[in-house]
Amino acid sequence: MADLETSLLQALHAQEVIADSGDLAKSLGVEHIVLVGTIRSLQASEMIIAEDIDHFRYVLTDEAQGYLTAGSPEAQVFNAVPAGEGITLAELKARVPGEAGDVGFKQAMQQRWLALDKSAAGEPRVVRKVDAIEDRTQQLLADVTGGRELPKAEAESLAKKRKLIKPEQWKTYKLTKGPKFALERKKPATDLTFEMMSKGTWRTQEFKDYNFNALGVPPPSGQLHPLLKVRSQFRKIFTQMGFEEMPTNQYVESSFWNFDALFQPQQHPARDAHDTFFLTKPANTPADRGVDKDYLNRVKSVHEMGGYGSVGYGYSWKLAESEKNLLRTHTTAVSSRMLYRLANQPGGFKPAKYFSIDRVFRNEQVDRTHLAEFHQVEGLVCDRGLTLGDLIGVLNQFFSRLGLKKLRFKPAFNPYTEPSMEIFSYSEQLGKWMEVGNSGMFRPEMLRPMGLPEDVNVIAWGLSLERPTMILYGIDNIRDLFGHKVSLSMVRKNPLCRLGL
Ligand code: PHE
Image 1: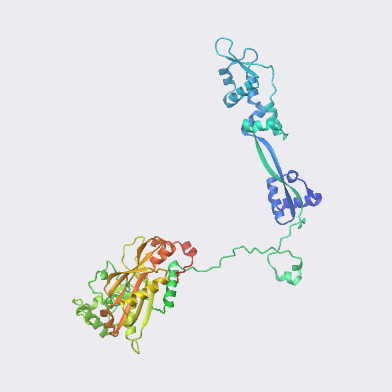
Image 2: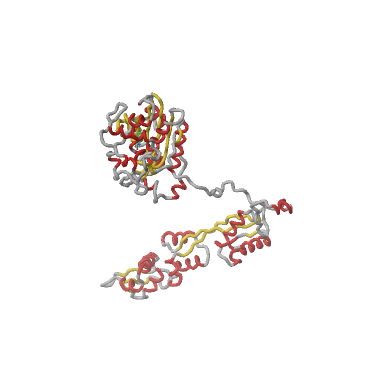
């Protein structure tokens, strides 16, 4: 529409004032509505000033269009009645059918153009009461079409009672030159260039105003998955409490570190293929790889006959069973490796606080809250003379940093801890106690064969990473959080995680 813009600017330049943009549109041969776009854009650039001119007129309704040539309903009905003896109602209805007939008859009677003659026997007859009529309604409709103004009362009656005309409103504009009037629009520069600087044209160059509300281009970047956001918060809490992270980069473990070292008997149901994923290639890790022979024998013996105050399980421990490779079922496998290393480090035992957050695998029935893999958060403190009171104290500290301040403990069972406690937290949101983790003190049957001194205890606890993540982000189906059905836009738009530190 640049042409239209030029025409408008030239017209305004020549005339100084354009009294009505409607006339300009006519002289340019365009619909006024087309010109409005140009006017608005020039006004926004302060090249012209546009003042509203309000217009009002009546236009014919669809029904009235037909009466413009055929005559108003009342005239049609009058003309259908022959002078003299007249016509029956039924005959009249046949001659002027439909609504025009009904309305026309009513109007003609009201005008006293017609009357109903009941004097003769038989059907009453419609007869003329005047010789000729003037079709005022048709005349008024023609006036409306011709743009002539109607007397107020008649206009209102046609608009409101008979609905033959309707009001129409529109705007045109009075145009004058604006402060930045020019015959051609100058495009303001968006940037200061080297050329403007060197030629000095920046002095006269018009610049586009800065839009400080513009959002800008989002910088290309990766996004953390919600699980990783929550994991980094857990990490922060652990490191603030002085815990050191354990190396968890080993999904495949031998049964020895995952179960045997933890005093989990070889017949335990968790060691069945129904619960654990065993590897076929390679199916085994030979015991002489990484495990000290004496330690291995102490583990065998504590399972079979006990020791350190225990009677053991009294079964025949099989080396082959402990060599089976599996996908680790808990990160406690990592903890057992670390505790063994701690017991045997050069310079002897030193107290330690360790944590890990990583993936574990279980042969589970998959449903909306379970997958065959999930992440475990695990913490442990290894020191002399620790008690259950220390465990409860550390748990209170840890969970209150997560924002869970009300805890309760319930006795539980793990093959590797005694005592063991399930951890419950009161959810104000849900109004009930929720299980948030599992904990305990590692058994002497686990710690002493490793070589840890008699007075050293280990308190430990574990929880899933998925559960708090789903609660924090309001995700109720685990398949929306993890796996091939996760929507990438969920990951992209997912907000920051700030746990109640
Ligand atoms: N390993 C336990 C589990 O898988 C969690 C746990 C860790 C329990 C440490 C006690 C001590 O549920």
